[in-house]
Image (cartoon, rainbow, N blue to C red; front, top):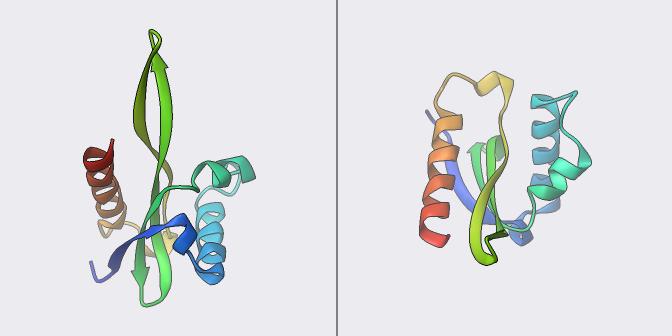
Length: 108
């Protein structure tokens, strides 16, 4: 795998990268990914695999407050996972999900 995997906060995404991620996600799920799905993937940490300057893999971790039996738990939700079709089968999805798991384990 010859990609660069980076952690980026939603606020740190440039307009160009944000547009490219939207294109990646809608391309991976053309009939199923909605604007609501996109919004659910914002506000946390993005794990982005770049091939050069082009995002080719993505997962985001977004904090959610959960209540169980009246008790609050802070959880990290995995959202908006996708790999560009031209880069599938190279372990990129596994890499972004693995790093997202580390973010969840460290912060939630």
